[in-house]
Length: 144
Image: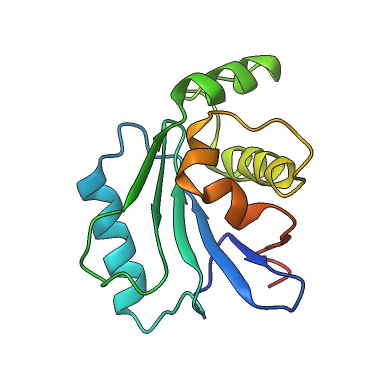
């Protein structure tokens, strides 16, 4: 199993998603694919779950069993949603520190695991990512 920032488990303890929070501004699909390939090429596994990279501007996700060198099959613009949320806590995508960004993503993911709450942006629903995270038990790297 990968040493990741967060792992989302279902009620049976199976991995739904391995999630990385990276405060990389201007991240591209190529950057995300290289990041994933590097993480998986060092003997890591997603345990049969999705692989998700969250940056201040974008979410990149791969369905389970997608080849290591494949580009993300899901890409969602988070810039507006995250900018609004960060402004509410007095930060911006440019000023938030990496550790603070990881905590911010933990807060956001925690909201996504509760299916009764509103999810932004709407692409989280249409892409299936909201369903992957709904009801999941989220574990941070320190506890994993």
